Image (cartoon, rainbow, N blue to C red):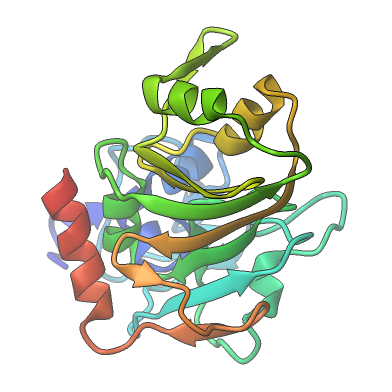
Length: 241
């Protein structure tokens, strides 16, 4: 880091494992960050060598060791770093992880499957960028048989309250089950489309994020990405952009 130039505060926070770069911008604008005791609420401010950065009054230092963790989230856990209602958090399942990591992307509370945690702001930016194009694969089992109209409509795009939900691919696995691949992944997308067809998911599980698959990872368990997996994920994101 150059003493005279420094790096942008949101980049510093992301590299410290606070959150993704975009989320760090929101944290700054909310007035939660200070530099050398003075509130920093502008995105253009820079951190120089020797500066003391605090978030909510607590010192923030750059993480030296990058961690990349893949969790098989059980249903009932929130993909958030805190919850005012005290509901269980997926991050609480990462026992023994010393680094401060955060989730990249989300799974809603009652969905299960793969979610990535990291303190690498650069990777989070690649995966979280709207143009990232990281595809994610889901297996869903519903409470009643799925008609052919569901598959055709989801491929073409379903307009719900002015928002178009479109799967990259959707195929039948069984009478009441489907394999769905999403790229953009709008909030509760699969659930909303199923509701349009008067169906509810009994199981909604994410089994793949880009090149990473769930394999035999047990529900509630996590693992570090193997050698080369993080770089492969970054390369996958760059290729898709």
